[in-house]
Length: 220
Image (cartoon, rainbow, N blue to C red; front, side, top):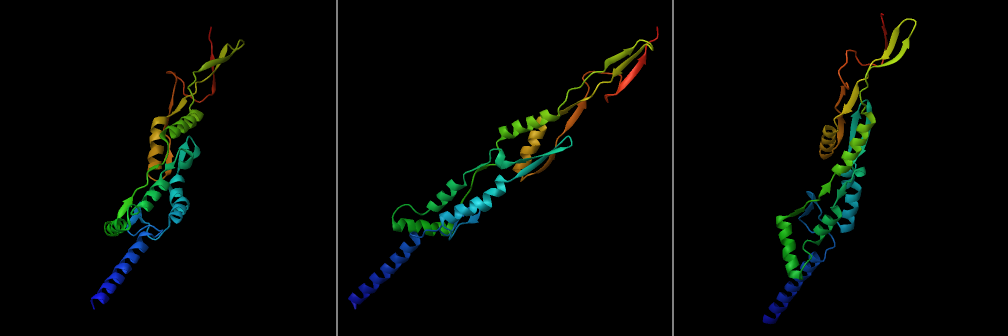
């Protein structure tokens, strides 16, 4: 009877050991492991990497901001302005949870993770602010224009009349404000922003801008 009990205990111990080893040696993420709140249980590392590359990262790298600038539209995409993510590193770290130590310690860690959970976060840089700033400066330069003063374009000696062209108002985009708008839009998922510009005169003049020619008669 004693021998039979011993054999039974040994068989039971072996069965528990076999179950323990099967869980420990699983080549999928253990239960309770999350990345960015997404359960990874049952997926292989290769499946996770492929899913992230095809379905998760594009939603961030593909963020677009359309800039309305003085009547023209320009679209900026995060992937063109320094988008970066450490998702591969984080997925590998998550996969390694519970895989260090001997079988018993690993099994205990796996049980703890299944009970308490472990959620790892991916770090992302949506855009490089310097790159966005440089692009905004380029766009602003295409529409910024200095004011011009009224100036004489001709004189008719017979009629004693001067002909002059009135001054043109300048136009300037608030590039700093536009950069802030664009960065904020990227941080909030993308969208459309409108540049704020202003018209100005180089110096005071009695004549409205518009670039038209006027004549003044000279009385002698």
